Image 1 (cartoon, helix red, strand yellow):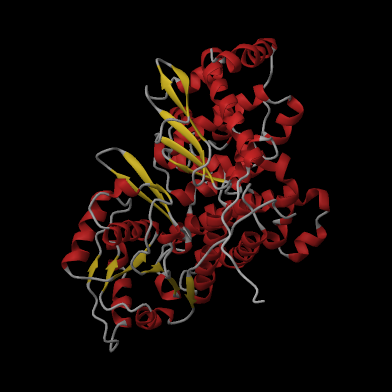
Image 2 (image 1 turned 180 degrees about the vertical axis):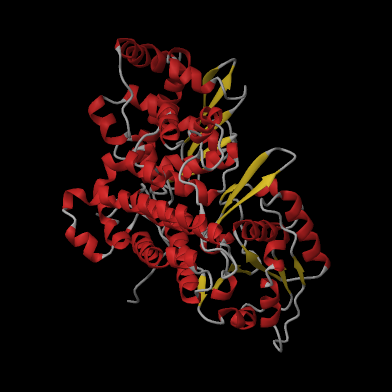
Length: 174
Length: 394
């Protein structure tokens, strides 16, 4: 019998997609909480224009999330918006997985071309600084040391902010 | 050590050597070009360099679609628009950039408009926005520094919006880079020194920055060796054709290296100082190179030590104890700068470059928003940048 070479439909990575969706949710709500409580992030976003939005998405049609500045703070807008002023596109689900599971830092990820940035570069730099601060909250210092060039100091106040993020900010969106 | 992941791409054909420019019509024929437009500036024309280009077309059967030699030192969207108009009126089908960074970036901008259509460059700003293959672009550099002949970037000012537009796309790569010693021989000593230090910085930063990889390292190391042997020589004697060609090759190799490995803190400070205090890019590179390398020493000591081999030579490397090699590399950079200062007055400090001290804070603020900082191995915040600027001041 003649050997067949049928076309192969692309599969799905359900588990990693779910992880990234959870991370986007966690990150989006963390942006919201920290924009109210962290002095460094407040200072950083004070220079952003009202209505400025950034999006993170996975190429080509994977999970995405948008955060927007509204009334001086950052609001998590979920996956509904289809465009933003600054768009960070991860080239693959695996690339995003590496970054969001702390196997690779933001700067290292950019250096390794894991994602591309469309939009204003100074704004992307400002967002990177915010992301570094948030990663300092989300990960224990042992992990932060591996992925950040410099771990932000964690005085007592920041430990309280971390508690707020995990107990109030992420579950309740406040 | 191999990076966990890297990419390297450079599709530019390099034609280098004596009378290389005379092969330009052949290269154009290979690309099916009938009517190329030459883009250049007044300095290049006045130095007689565009005449060498037109001379190369004798008996070639190719009609030049025109020579636009009014590109200003900083390319702008207005100039790009004006040249695109000439290109369309004269029914040209390719571009030849003859000049330094400004003429080359302008040609890349013109290529976007004449290939993609329209008159508004703004819609093409950003990374990977261009979707189609552009018209053939051939670059003939007249300075040995920027490496723009082998990069996929163009930076063009938009005066009415007061912004600098950055375009990055693989479609922006020129098809051919022609390195002919006749084309850089007229550069005066100070420009030669500044552009040479720019090339050296491209090569050296590409070896220590986060996107470094074994292929870019190979390009960078070859570039540094050529600069070590030829920069001072051509500053002393600009007519040295062999030295000029070596420097043109060094700049080209360093350009291919840094456009794949990216650059870091030296460029961060240089871009900001150029933007705020209008210090020429090469001069800024020369000023900041040792300071930024000292700052990065804590995380990149082994890589900086490795640079001693191409920069100081095998004997210097051999006689320097392993633990002292990184420091020795920085010492050699300082002594090269001193040498260039004595030979042609290339500034060693921001003060010598005419920067007002009260501008340092503004420069530091601009620096922390520069994209190149992402690729620097060590974190730099506003206070760190300000401290470095103060160190480099006098």
